[in-house]
Length: 144
Image: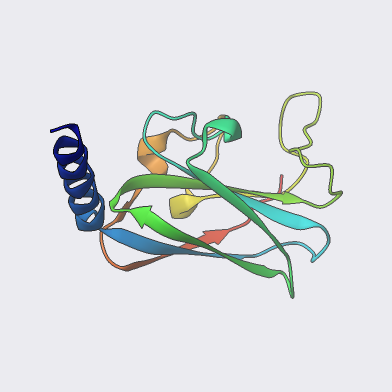
């Protein structure tokens, strides 16, 4: 009886996970001031620390910058709503350097290329839908 129940549960789990639609999210990043260092890219789910709590990002990756451009690909992203941040780590210290006012000293970017005024944007301003097998997000780096 136990073996039959366990087998049945595993079969249901496989069916559920295989029915989940997944996408490849391609992040094309441009308008770097230079090709030094690397760019970090974080993809966030709603209510998960966007834009400043990178440890809460669903996934992250990094890439070198070549000819002031970079591309990062996230595979197997479930269909849903997300937002992305990027950070040009020019000095390779793995953090966003800030001035005494807390403003970024290195380049950054966000999905939807929302204009930054006095504070970081919220998730709703930067969100995008992943609802096809491939989703392309273009981000333009900003420097203050």
